[in-house]
Length: 86
Image 1 (cartoon, helix red, strand yellow):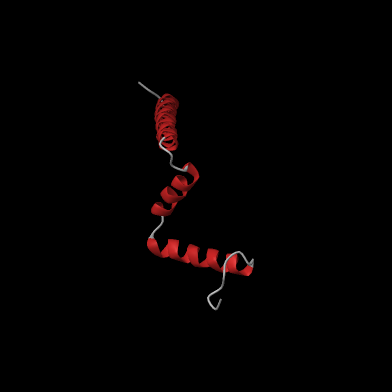
Image 2 (cartoon, rainbow, N blue to C red):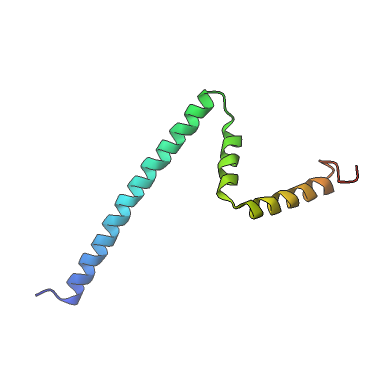
């Protein structure tokens, strides 16, 4: 008969092993993504801009528009972009 501590140990071991497998999968996927960026760079694409495009596509349209409006406001305040009346 298994006591509670044996069950807890087995459960803990199971969680740890599952997390370890997922971490390994995550590393493999991260390496694959890195390879795709390297391929894109090799084909003449700017990877910084590509990363920004990926980031923007993750946002919903309203969130993206709000951030762009704030960015425009900040750039205007710093004289880096003409304001609406210029």
